[in-house]
Length: 475
Image 1 (tube, rainbow, N blue to C red):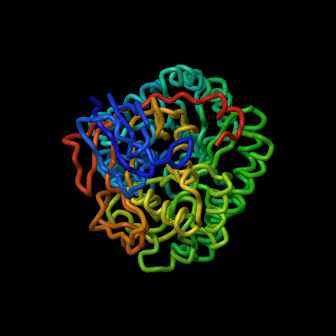
Image 2: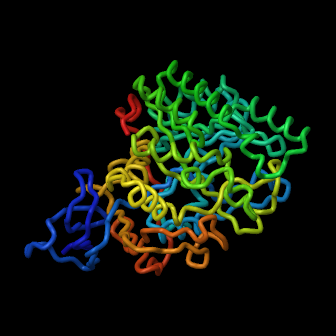
């Protein structure tokens, strides 16, 4: 007998949208059977998804947990850990998260993954992976030489910053020469390099000018983190990647200029992938002027309505590949502790509502097909981060990770209904979808708004980047 069968749902598979029953055994999809047939197999547990939409469990490739907030470094205030963030994720239909393992000077590279992995082990309701992360101007040669070893052990992505972000927070920028060196190592080892792209010279000069002019309130954030900075940094790192022959993933694209740099690179068949965040595709710089406008902020800044609209056009066209959150989950008092461009807290709670907002904005309001919705909420992140087809697909042999969504409704989001924090920047947003059931490797974690899992059982995933994704713009 099967462990689980999900019957009668509208299911988005790699082959298209189908009415099939999903058969699960030992955490794996073992069959897809036409719904309504009398010979459909029996199972120990059945989920009736009649009238509901079944999609692969969401994958958020960009979250931060247990990290000291850079603008609160002196106080040691941290964002919430994997337990809190993953609970919100599974309530919203996301079943895989990717966090950051920060290398510290003096340690072996594998030790950074081990240290961060211990924070997640036994604490996460979702499965998870880790980006190796560097926040130093220089990466020692002996550490660079350790990249192939950790890639072979299953860690297939790394991250660097091209800016220190603000003049007041701890330094984190890696020099371009050392990004070049890391890029050579990741390309050779078959890994993905993730980049926070802002031009540090432009950003730091902008801060000096704004301080001189006494324009430091939060609404001036777009003047500090401007479109020119994104354009220059993207063009620079894309050129470097072209020289090396390396795949790169550009995080939190915020401006039309950044999109255009990605479009040009992909037109040359470079394996360049872009990520957008939901709030860049909905809010604009005008929202900084609202009461507590800082709740809408992460780095880089919100931009214009034209930049916002370009996000959806680019997701539809495939220029941008993923919808992540850059989640930095805190309560409201921490999120609003800084009220200027110098001390604003970046990131916000958003993992739980990501799938609902994406469905509403993409499918309902803009008419994008369901397969495209699955691409940028799950499948493409799995491909780019070396998790596909175990993750990101409802297919025979894939992990049985599903989000069962009720659609065609009007659900007004409020923090009281969520699980990440005591506030949400999406307060009052009217969503057209809501997650009803979350399944991870065949286990029902959430059903009708209730957490059914007795304890966190998420697993560390092994990443293995395909040569297709590494050699051309494959998704």
